[in-house]
Length: 279
Image 1: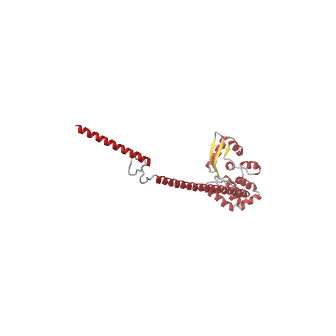
Image 2: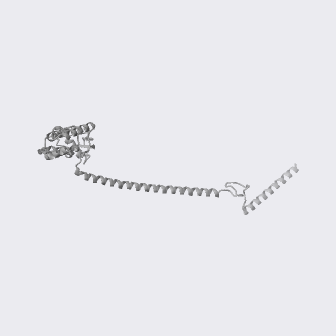
Image 3: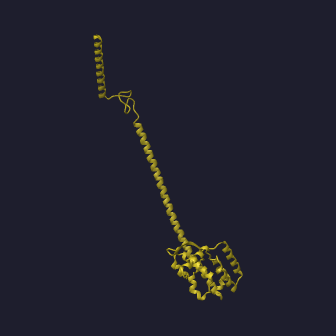
C-alpha cells in the first residue's frame, strides 16, 4: 500500500524505477532496490513491494535486501539498527532518508517532538546535526513545521503519509467507521439544536404578533372612549359652550349668578340717570 510524498518530478522518477523493476530479476533487481532507497524524493515503496518479482526476493539469497526494503516502507532507523547485523550496510543518503521517515513516524504520534527523543531515535550526536536533518526533510517536502530552540523541540504542522501494511487495513477501516459514526452523532445533535432554535423562533414571532394585536386593540378602545358626546364639554374648556349641559345643582347656581348680575346692571343704570338729572 502506498502513502504519499514527493513532487511530480520525483513521482516520474519512481515510475521509471517501477518500469525497470518489471524486467529485472535476482542481483539486478536487488541493485535496483538499493538505487530506489538512495534516490532523493522517493519516500513510498508500496508499489515496488507489491511487484511479484520483488516479493520473490523474500525467499531467495537476496532476502536481506527485501527486508531492508520493508524497513524503509514501514519501519524506522531504530528498527534498522536492531537488525543491522543481518542487513546490508546503508549509504549516508540512505541513512538520512530512513531518519526522515522515522521523524514522520514520530510526527504521526506526537506533534511536538522533544529534541531528546529525536536524538535518541535517530542516533545523532548533537543538536546541530538534528536541526540540519530536519531542515533537509523540510526542503524535501517530507514535513513542515518549526524548530523551537528555546524549548528544544520540533513542532510539526504537516508530514507525508507512509506506506500501510495490509494487516493494518482492518484497523484503519474500523477507525474510519467509528469516526463516521461520531460525525453522524454530532450531525444529529446539530440538527436537533437547529430544530429547537426554529421552534423557539416561531414561538417568539407568534408571541410578538399576539402582543402587537393586543396593544393595537387597547389603543383603539382608548381612542373610542375619548370621543366627546353631543352636549358634553371638551376636556380643558372653560365656561358654558354649545356642548355644555350643567348638572341640576350647577344650573341653579348659574341662574342665581345671572339674576345678581342683572340687579347690579339695573342699579348702575339708575345711578347714572340720577347723575344726569342733577347736572
